Length: 373
Image (cartoon, rainbow, N blue to C red; front, side, top):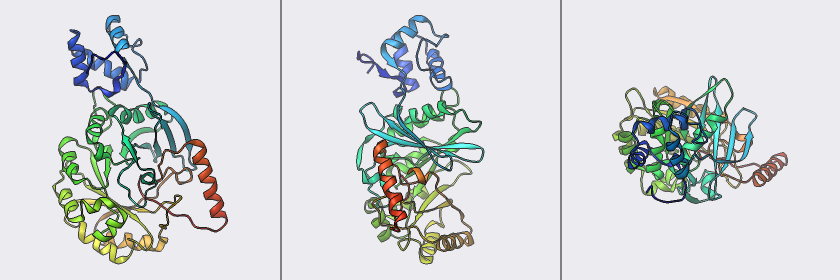
């Protein structure tokens, strides 16, 4: 593993793997912590600056490793302050991450795959198909690079795995990345309660996530009956609602936390009072909260956003049944950075498609809408 001549990105290696590399060279294990602090806490881009390591150690590291950064292809800023980053990976493939401003902090929406294989009907990311999983280092680099880029008084405190891809389908790399994101000694020092992983419903990994991490779970639900959910989310054929709810009941969140169920409201599909009543019955046995997400527009989709009165009526039913429920107003819609709009398009393609969309709206032709990425 460590004998290849080609340099490797050190972000791809865990602390234990780095300790093993050092041990092969008869270097003390505590040097791994010094190294990791330089990489994640001090944002070092080279080994020469690591002055508490000897020149011999720095030289050996430089011969074997690089400290990776992602190539920034494009940065777009929304009218609401959201920032979308288009990154190019080492093999030329592209991903997007979105920095979302909150009242006193930032939340970063992170991708876990290039594309997505889940084929959810409301999601633009799915339209591009699945290309590959992101590596541990590529996941971490989204956070590390954007964190370094911030010069605002607000702090980046929250991470949500709600970008491109299905996080639980890339489980090993996801959990490995989370370990460094939440490492309070040598990692990026995010509190586990401020990291959320969203899934379309891979039940085999939901329970494992609760055992292997202390992060939050969000389930993209979007329907209260199997027929509707299968129409919207093909994964429901393999993991129908009964099995999904059973896995959620078995999931063990950290004390005091609840599972979040994300429900994209789509006009005439899943937004009726009957849908709301059925959803309340479905979720009653689970300690949870509900995020209602009115559908977001994107090209090539016929789904539509419900009227505000319909959205409010759905909310009122859940609230009256004592659910914690929030209507989530997605940010970044004007730069295709809202839930379900991420597709890692090139600069020219994205600009052209948005211009065409504006022209269609000006001409009175309606646009579709989408959910999560």
